[in-house]
Length: 541
Image (cartoon, rainbow, N blue to C red; front, side):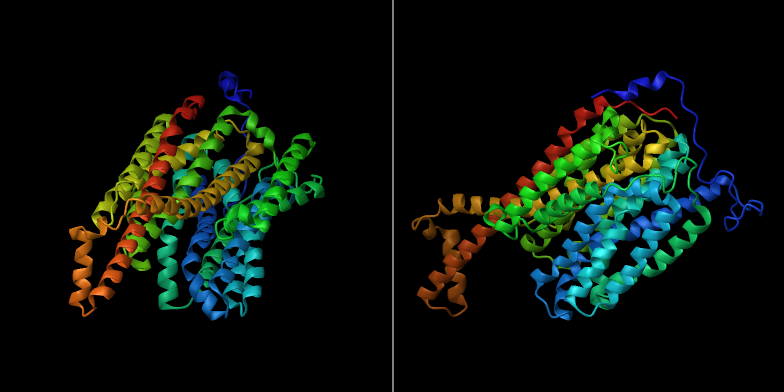
């Protein structure tokens, strides 16, 4: 793989005009003089695209806690209601890779307005749905339109802000992208408990309207976008849709259907293994590809994509792992678990402005990135020593430590990854970045749920092998029987009851060991990725 970043000493190419260059700030009409500075209009654009991105990211996590309420309201089982999540994830995954191509085909501003409008309207339809099939259809529409929001908003900010201000812009954008999924379950639970699950979707309406207005007035296409000049590759689109759809359904339903024990999962695995490589080969050979895999020739970009995939794996895997640990082993309610997940989000929110300030001072992003991976990785080792007696303060400090680590990780990773990409390729690059992070997150969630179930069974067998009839006569086991006799049970019933309590305790210990292993593995992954930073070069503003 050629290292294109080694050309940094060559004369820099002419910079394309800014999105706002030559445009009025008064309703987009050039006949009026600008009423505010370019700097101020940049931050208005940042607010416009960040608000739409947060709206979309929040929706991926806020619905999870509402599933039991949705199932009960629409007269369906909880298993059937999980398709509300799966349908969104699949539609989102299909549209993400082609967002850069769509922006060049339709125009970036037009596409942004279309996806924000579509996401807002489909949110209203989801809230008004009267049956589960209708809700699933509307969620597919919501995922299709929402999939393009993240890479488009990221591309706009990278285009709009010059080099030395790019860190501040990415910190502002990353504040919402990282914090939103952390606070999403808490917000979703509060809305569902105090109002209705329908308001989980209705809250998108004012945000979507505000974002549409700001985008319409302040965002403009860069001159290199040639709207409508690209050829539509229908075969490529078909391969992508089948391959990504099968991959996402397989990852989402694999553990539930027992992986290779399910004919459906095996079929999906084969289809994904055939269509995705075929799609990659077709795009590499195409004159006008809809996904530009050739961007991987930039060593720095390829390295950053690997790190982004690991980041998605660990971040979203831990977002599933921690609340499950709090509720199933520590016995906390969903609300309590959500509240005690918030220190991570608060620490990230506090750390993001510091990151923007530090990057504005032209610090070497590689050292920041290495430190962030180390701090966040070590925090997982703190979780791996939790016990069934752990309390809120035992969890708080690893959460705060991890939150700060994530704050200093996300922005430098984005700026370093995108540094060698030419401006006209930015949309394609952000699409690849987003899709690989999403694939990493899907694999992370699937891995966590599978690992907890399988490793719990393994440890349960090991622990059960060490329990003999003689060991049940030990004082700590006899204490169970004595407690039950005090509650009025006969000696025989108390003996059977004490054995049931012993088995319950054994299951909890086996489950604890599986959680500790998963936390430990995530810490190892973050530490193992640090040496790859040596393949990257610092950006020069």
